[in-house]
Amino acid sequence: MERVLAGIVEAAVEISGAEEGRLLLPDETTGELFVCASRGFQEGSVNTVRTPVQDPLAGEVFKTGKPIIRGEKTPRKVGTDHAVHAFIGTPIIAGGRVMGVLEVGNCQPGRSFQEDHVALLSALSDYAAIALENAQRFTQAMAERSKLEAILSEVENGVIVADYDGRLILINRKACEAFGVHEDQAAGKRVRDLIQHQDLPEVLHDEELVAPTRIEITLKDGRVMNTEITPIPDLGLVVIMQDITHLKELDRIKTEFVSTVSHDLRSPLTAILGYIELMDRVGPVNAQQQEYVRRVQASVHAITSLINDLLDLGRIESGFDARKEILPFNSILEFAVEQLRNKAAEKSQNLVVDISENLPYVLGNPTRLRQLVTNLLANAIKYTQESGEIRLRAIAEESQVILQVADNGPGIPAADQPYIFDKFYRASNVAENSHGTGLGLAIVKSIVENHLGRIWVESTAGQGAVFTVVLPSVDSKL
Ligand code: ADP
Image 1 (cartoon, helix red, strand yellow):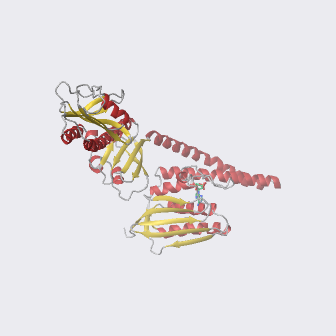
Image 2 (cartoon, helix red, strand yellow; image 1 turned 180 degrees about the vertical axis):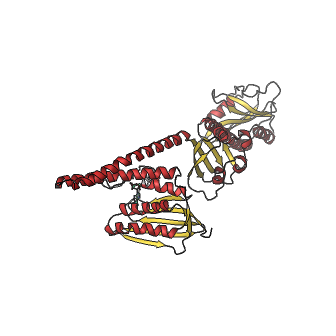
Image 3 (cartoon, rainbow, N blue to C red; image 1 turned 90 degrees about the vertical axis):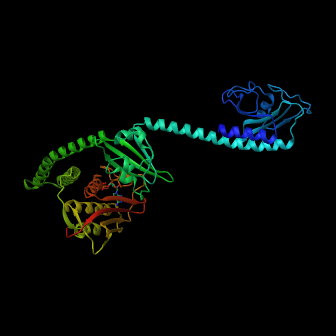
């Protein structure tokens, strides 16, 4: 900026044929003018940078925002810090604000300026205004950047910003620490070359990533990072990593605890059911007692199904039933459909099954895959009103099978959708009398993840829901 302003002063002196010229800017705190660039001043009389200038003419230009021209013929006496016989001062105005003054002067008598010199100096002042404005914006941007850098380096979360070519724009201290990277070696490098991790560079080089994505990354030291990757148009991808190791550990302890307790609860429950069934065999039971027996049975069944769900979830999550075989996916689907056809019929629902003929094989655990389809289908039947429609559709696409279970029931409110795969979560619009443990979809999600697949839901409240599951398929000849 200083070079540009010096050039402007030089041009002002040349164009106006003046002996001297200078550019004055105000001090932001005191408001006093100081010399920022000057030309032609005799040594000693030149004000050094940041020394305030007591110059009533320049002061007036600065205050009024209007150019001033003075010569020996003008009635007002010229008076500056050194004798000047002729003078022009033009304001430097940017964004409606006076930012400084450009002035030229002649000390020798008989050398006055013309009106057109004022116009030329005003044009130069406009250039100075642009330069000053740009410099100000640049300074502001740099200040913001260093503020942002200070914040980012202090936050406890890892932050990485990369452009769409996977080149690093920014990486903070925590992220460097997590991947063992030196901060000063990182700038401009490709994430793939810098970060040695199987998952993260993959995602950052995924050109199809358009929506925010969440993955869990396990670091070399065993820490688990909840990692959110958000695409930002025209910038690239922003990665935020949060250490959730303690939550994972808590989750593991909780699951272990729940599994143990569930297991221990099963035997007494079986005993209760057994003895209840024996009741009417050992003596007459009146109608009221019969009703109580029925209620006890219903409650014990509800607890049993909760316990079974919990035990299933524990088993799936711990990878207990990892035994997998090559299975024709259509037989899995047909089994689930046959199991639930009656349930749909009881509600006079139309169950439409559309299974593509050449459905490939999948590598999986038959019990769990049946459970996956049954849970989705059972939910669709349970939540959809009488005479509603349930559609099960399965197609093959490249090396995967895509299963969709759609219904025209009440749908799931957008606010609930991110949580419905969580344990014990039930959406806000389920009827109070609808039974459920809130574990069905958590089980489904665990099964899908166990089979290296993906699951998501699309739904608009009041307009039904579509659950889509994508599973990798295998060649049956393998
Ligand atoms: P549960 O059915 O036992 O409540 P799930 O884990 O199977 O538990 O489902 C979680 C929640 O998701 C349900 O409580 C319900 O609010 C919602 N949900 C699942 N499937 C559907 C569907 N097809 N239509 C509407 N809501 C659904």
